[in-house]
Image (cartoon, rainbow, N blue to C red; front, side, top):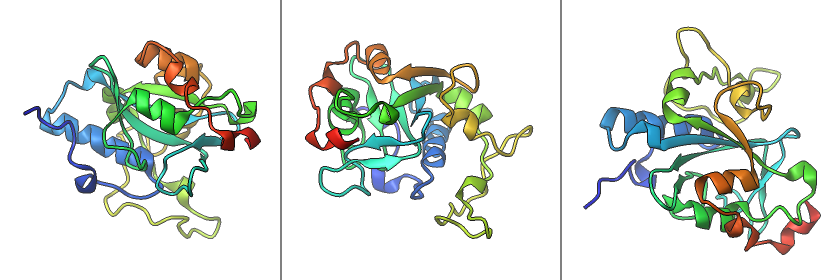
Amino acid sequence: MNRRLVPMREDCVYTSCYCEENVWKLCDYVRKQRTAPLEHLFVIFISNETRTVPLWKQKSGHGDLPVIWDYHVILLQADQSDSLVYDLDSTLSFPCSLKLYAAQALRSESDIKPEYHRKFRAVPADSFLLNFASDRSHMRNSDGSWKMSPPTYAPICTAECQMNLDGFINMDPAIGWGVVFSLNHFLQRYIGSTSSASSSSSSTARSW
């Protein structure tokens, strides 16, 4: 039996609305347990210039309506013919094939307004583990209270940095880490085609 890359969904470290840290913990698990070579793993930040990105099949969604995130983060395992997505906030299987995730969670952009088009920053997992830092200040209100309760463990930081989350969310390819793709180029890179997303255009997307 093949060894699991990460624990079962219910056994993973998870805090709602802290997807970047949830994925960091997944990468850290793989690094410590050596369940796969890190070079096969990519951390995918999904956002855009307006920070309004629709995703379907999210736990916080209602029916077949998308959730509009300012950004979202998933883990991609790209060492086989059909890449696998690990999304702890999705109602799809864990993991889920990228082809299915594209069809069900990303869907086509043909009926989505341009300001809602998604971009994808693919960061090698080893680079993410080495460089990512967040003091969680983006989750505080102006009075210092939390928008959402933070993880119980200490904030993730490096010796040089306490906060660089925006360098990962920002979709300007000239800054930050990794490579920035459009939806079509992302699917071409990791699936080899864009048919999966285009085959599942949602009627609910026409207003976006």
